Length: 101
Image 1 (tube, helix red, strand yellow):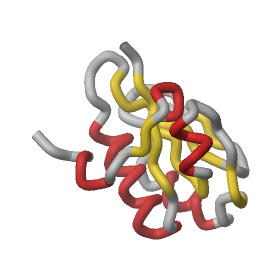
Image 2: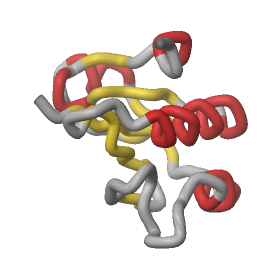
Image 3: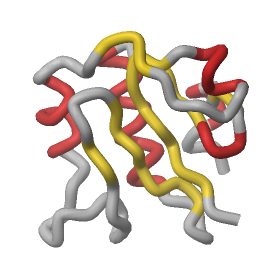
Image 4: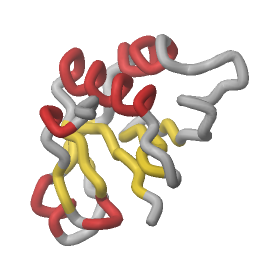
């Protein structure tokens, strides 16, 4: 199964219903944070990602775990105050679950 990490100022109730609803757009600083993790091919950990003004969708389990995506998600959560979610599967992701062995 493939999982993405969606990062943004998301509505937690919508996430639990498997819906993507955004309270407000990301700040302009989000692109600079994300740029620290993008490789020379324009990917995150060798995988494509999606960035919109409202949210960023990072490749998480595809099928292997993408630790670079986890690092990027943690940086965005810490510096932007974003929520992390696996929207397709209707769950919020606790940052403490990331980068664990």
